[in-house]
Image (cartoon, rainbow, N blue to C red):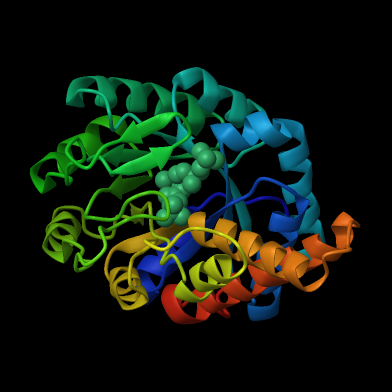
Length: 311
Ligand code: G3H
Ligand code: 13P
Ligand code: ZN
């Protein structure tokens, strides 16, 4: 089976009330860890590549790694550009084998976001590629963009019909209180999401797939492990899993997770070196990292996404 788009995945996910995991990939061990878990649980998956990942690992390497995973697992896998910053980056990914792109015009004024998104959709659809747009601003850090909490704002439900019909996007990322990175809430602050906004968006766009960015739970066991083995992340806090599961049962069809994978890798490597200070063969500690990624993705599929057996 070749790489797929997200069209069929989202249709089924919407109807059955589950979500597809969209995991960021930056190297071979990450691709292998994620897809091993998906293979074990027969789950469809989106592997996504940020501009930072393209800069780090290079486009061709990531495409070939993902193609190898498709060949090895036989699973439905979509290759997606995460937070495409401009038309040129989207075009380069569309021309270079991706099956899905995100154009992130969320920091631009509304009309500019519409214009840019529409231009990407036109090019993408002519090449059989689907497009995710975004309305509303998440707090947090992605690549070089750091959106402060004051600048972040929730999606306005009254804009979504106009945006979707004028741009022709295939899915829409919205801001309901999630945020990027490992520090999503202040210490002592009660984590909460605006399910009222999600419900209103769903009502205005019946059957339309919604995307949640910044959806790592910042798994406490990995934060604890990092702190135990020499790291310093005492205030790291994420989105409670039951909230994500609730969103997956509503209109949310794609849940983006990167930070939890970073934490699992880092925690397991820190632990490895604490236990085996004399090791210097990367295959030894990267095996632990890959196993930790497999285990966290397995956990997400079972606890948050609900997409096991749906490949
Ligand atoms: O939303 C951002 C993702 O976590 C990707 O992060 O831009 O540092 O690769 P990155
Ligand atoms: P996290 O930082 O919560 O993992 O979010 C990742 C993301 O939204 C990628 O686009
Ligand atoms: Zn994101």
